[in-house]
Image 1 (cartoon, rainbow, N blue to C red):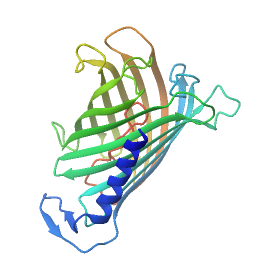
Image 2 (image 1 turned 180 degrees about the vertical axis):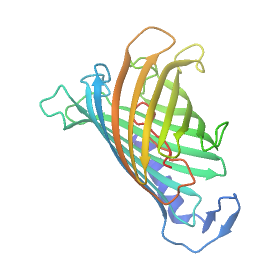
Image 3 (image 1 turned 180 degrees about the horizontal axis):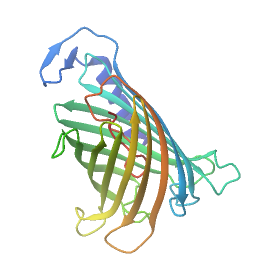
Length: 287
């Protein structure tokens, strides 16, 4: 995995240093452009797991999460159709003396290419405990995404994604840390309930197990439903997440949380795409 990480980091540098001086217009046409300041998307979020008796605070399924600190950064040079996406995610453990101190750190890096309603993402994620030694989960993935606004309902937002976890290091296919993940199927939707202020948000994420006779059949379902209130660059959201095995019995993790988020976005026409896997972060578009 060290070699794989080095390959991805090298690819990132190469894409930004030697790419031709191109910029992709919204229509999909390509034009030559002088290098300029990059387009930037940035967000910070704090989640409080106000009701949680099963969602764990480390990859080895120990502890119980109390807080989550999230950061997202996306940089796209004007001369490149490829964006660099960085995500970081910290959990804290309410069973420790200091419930504000991080217990797990999830870090991810990705290269994102957008074309009209389509996107391709190459990413690497590593989830590790930081307050003690323990299990580390990591994977590399290629993901294809399709995005559509105004699907059925005016101003609604939707995207679907298919991911192939082509390299995994103990990244499991179920919440009880069994199996090895191979494919991921993602559906995400947002529906305006009151102007642009109140939104209904839903997210489903299926994993499959490469060790099963049928490696394309889902083994785990992570689903989220929430209500979000948005005003300018701010958002307050209340949501529930449940991660559960669907091909057999086993551990199910569930919580209810309230999240405060601040965003700075110079590309409001494109959906925010996180490199962290669903289940470790809640990714959604900013209005």
